[in-house]
Amino acid sequence: MSNTTTIARNTYFLFVSEIVGNMLSFFLLALMSRHFLEIGLGKHSFALSFASILLVFTEFGTYTYMIREISKDKSQTQKIFSNIMGLRLVLSLGVFIVGIPIAWLMAQGLEVFLVIIITMFAVFLYYFSWNMIGVFQAYEKMQYIAIGNVVEKASAFLIGFIMIKANASLGAFVATFALSALVYFLSMRLFFIKNIGTVNYSFDITYWKSYVKSAFPFWISAVFISLIFKIEPFMLSLLADYAATGWYSASERLVLSLNFLPVIITTAVFPAMSRFHKENKPYLRLVYEKSFRYLFVSILPIAIGTSLLSERIIIFIYRESFIQSAPLLVFLIWAEVFIFLSFLSGFLLNAIDKQHIYAGVTGSVFVLMVILNLSLIPAYKGTGAAISFLISSCILFLILYFFVSKEYKVKIGRIVFWPCVSGIIMTFVILLLQALPILIIVPIAGLVYGIFLVLFRTIGKEEIDLIKAQILKKI
Image (spheres, rainbow, N blue to C red):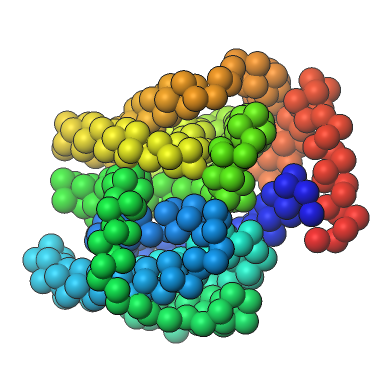
């Protein structure tokens, strides 16, 4: 199978699973928000942010480093995988134990403390499964990642729906995510045993030392990327209140649910990037350029449409009690444009052994974000956090693109020009259709945008033929 076909096939599997999974998550989020309102959502967002921040101290660069090394030499799979599983087990237990008293001090009540502990367990178990996902990614067997994702999201929706119908407390409802994380882990373990090998836990301290030294730059960048995405609900809870956190999180979760698109593309192309950096640099440049174009073409109409329809979107999903989330959604969706492109640039730096640069950039941007949050949140609450995220995301992309351009010259002007023209035309269409229901406006606007992409040859024969081939093969 050709490299192009492999990437397209893997992208297809991940895209379908993420669409299905995100639809289920979307419905569960709407049910949760309507049932527990902004304060309940704020409490859960605080717990999720706290657990995710702790999580980074169990990762130590395992995911990215493992994919890159196994992609290069699959004979080392069991040695690398089993030692990483053992290391992560030890680190997870240690961090969990340390996190319990910290959670008690920060919870300000038994209910929030229980929510934090259950969320910690769910998040740790969920990301423990990513060790196995990393191996599947290195082997470019994305269908198993896709199936596991759908199983996890479906189980979460089913359990969560039952909990809400039973009028469960917030603490009981959060157990939904712990149970679905357990289903996810067991599913991935089964797929791994059937397709890769046994799931072992090795405790070779000598290997750990060598591994940590090599993977440390990957870990640093992973720490800061995680903190960039998780620090704002945490700081909002401390500097404002749970209601402000809930309004912010309502918009943030909608926006971050779009991250599946850059994750899909970077997941599909990262193993190839690692190989082509040594084998075929011109092809790596082509992969980066095409991926950049696809990501920009995908996120631009979403950003434009969301900005113009933000209030209607919030009311449609969460009802009027979350109307204060609407202006925040505008800031966050444009930040997501820069996040899309930063994902790709960061993964490229990791693939070409420039992970130390990625770590330095993400660390600097995180410090900037903290400073902005401390300055803006006390006065402007959620709006301040949203502005901080937009500024930080823009700077993150600009710096990463600067370093990527030093290695691979890509002129983004010619990539973004015609999609921007198509987006402007789509803007006028949305303004003309404002009186129509949102479920009619969105598909019409999307169709207009797509038509002009074809007319301007932003989407050409190559992309159309590839889509046809995937449909005909019924992959």
